[in-house]
Length: 436
Image 1 (cartoon, one colour):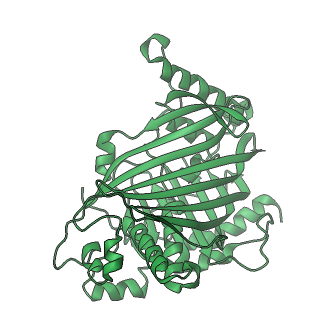
Image 2 (cartoon, one colour; image 1 turned 90 degrees about the horizontal axis):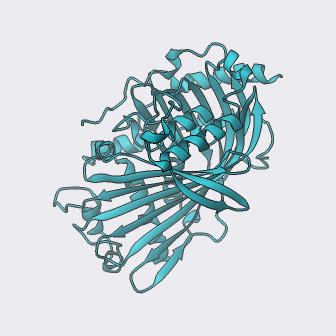
Image 3 (tube, rainbow, N blue to C red; image 1 turned 90 degrees about the vertical axis):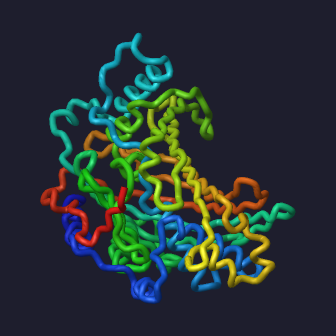
């Protein structure tokens, strides 16, 4: 079967999960709501993971042998690495003309580096300009694993987790139409299918049928939304932002738009490659719009490393800091009331005490490579991401740090897929839009 025929075949099974009527939360979450408990917020998934790791450290067993811990691990991986967003919105134009005397030298240097990047990726190719791409399709495979969790009590440090964690294999499908329209679906199989070859071109569509280990997200140009079985469907707060997976070598023009107001921070070596480092950061007003409840987003910064030799983007790193205020209440089923049911030994070793402010810092570094030409455009077909979750308090010396990894490969890319329309990006009807 040729490549375009394969795309049309995949499109048939891919369309159904993105119909406007999405499946609701799983029965377990519905039961919790009936019992009067609140639905989890996105950062609660991360908090629950650290709790399962702490429980494993006290009871001296590996988290991989516990079903509840395995479910928490899959939720964590999908929440952090499944479909993260870039820190800032895309610019309307790729690279507007600049007057050298009107901007700082750091911005002027970044503008020149981006011009070289667009030339290296084929954005200025005459064939590319004569036949512009109306849409894009990409399919690939992922391998994710939680490596270890480091827990400090202030006096000693414990490492929890298997020395060689079992990876979870999966696949994803991505549709893209104009910079603001996109949809992605990613599913994992616990432990991965037996005898699977990550470099084969076999169809992995059976992954999407596993609803409990799947994340679906999309954008119609106005609303960015995400659906998971444990949170249901909800819209992202704050300004409209692009999918991070798109700027990992899949869409050079969107990447150039994202770094349109970047500053050149100098040079740095990534492996054996000398790179120029560009930095963009979300504005204070924008990150404040993304705050929710007791969780306050403080900053979100993105660094791009562009090879001086090839001009291509080879490394991407973003850092996201959130402050969570814990206010203990007698009737709240939140973190503080749950701590009351623990043993005194566990309560004393919590990274922070009840009522204290907690900080969560998420850092994701992605190596990008294996660029291949597809219809005149250089597309990255392989990469690896390492994410670190760091939890700490304002005054306490206790902290927790978890590291997780993702390896991804692209096995199918096509442009101008027939039949793809605006209807494909309509948000689900059961979407929950948070109040401002």
